[in-house]
Image 1: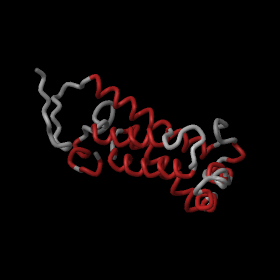
Image 2: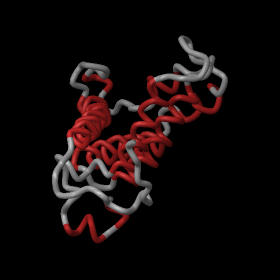
Image 3: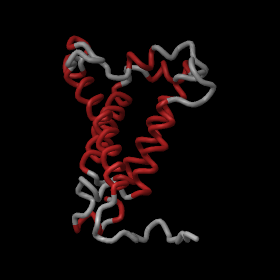
Image 4: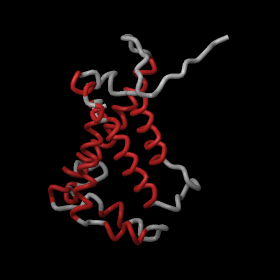
Length: 174
């Protein structure tokens, strides 16, 4: 009969060998990090994927206007459409995309990235309510759940900088 052991989340029971599941978490971490970082790059420079060059942030465009202005008919549309194009909202959004993306790709600050990334994703989810294709679940919620899983799994130690001594000594960098 197989037994399972229960240990507190902050105790690392892994030996020095990296398990296959660690690589799966690392690839998920880097992939979601790239989604955040790419959104930052495309909105900043307007490389023509989601943002045309003439609407890029460096060309005077607002990275939040397109999404938030489109929420006017939604349940919380009045709140979110009123935030569209506000410079402080643009800056917070872009710094969030850059910081969360960089943290995930590098494998440091995963706890902070999980909290801030989940908050950003839940706000984006709320801006779209009611959802067109599902009563409550969409990719924003799934990504938020995965972000929390990445932080809880300590996914920064595989294919990331999470094993650096400075990261190990400072819990806020884990």
